[in-house]
Every structure is written in structure tokens, then in C-alpha cells.
Image 1: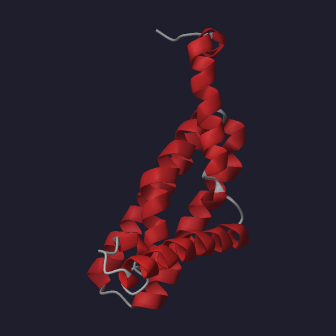
Image 2: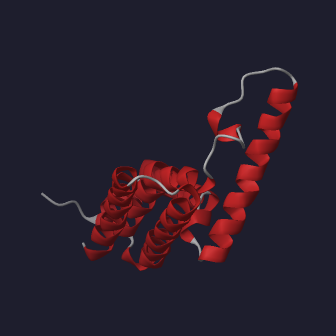
Length: 149
């Protein structure tokens, strides 16, 4: 049984949920922008994390993995961020509001660009590269399916 979208979205408790989701999407939307914006904001965020890690290290505190400039792969961190945090959120919203498909297209292209950077910077084994390619392809497929509903 299908429920009328006006009934679902018209309920006051659902209106707040939808508005919160849209505001949250706007807050984390940098990976869904054109590549130059995505890359610039990823660098800014990671530089902030690294500055915190530098302070932790200077104080003799354990450094969290995302804050360790010596161990973290920038491109791989972005692949994971998009895969686990951003793409599922945007896929759900694209499914609900198909006119948002442009964001899915950018996400798909950007995770592919991060994959290319990761491969060129790390020279992974073929097995490791295939695992990441498969993860990226799954994300791209999820975003494509969301826009085709």
C-alpha cells in the first residue's frame, strides 16, 4: 500500500524531519559540488584535522587516525567519507526528490576522481586497487539507481 506523499510530508513531525535532513545535506554537501569546490573543502577540513593532530602529538596525546597527517591518505579518507556518510544520505534524498540528481552526478564523478588520485599517489597492488574500485562502483551504482526510480 502506498501512502500519499502529501499526507506523509504534511504531518508536522515529518516536516521537521525533512527540514532537518535538508539542512544537514546542505551542511555536508561539499563532496556533491563541482570538483574544484569538493577538493578545496576536503583540503580545508583535513588541514584542520591535521592541525589538531599536530597539537595532540605535541602534547603527547594519542593522535586520532583522521588527524594524523603522516598516516592518512587524503583521497582514501574522502572515498570512505562519501561511501559511508554522504552517498547514502544523498541517494535517499535523490530518490525522494529526483530533481536533486545533479548532486548524485557530482558525487559519482568526485568519488571517481578521489579513486584516481588514490591510485596515483599510493600505487596499490592490483588486489587492493580492485577492492577500492569495487567500493567506488557500488557507490556510483547506488547513486545512479536513486535517480532512476
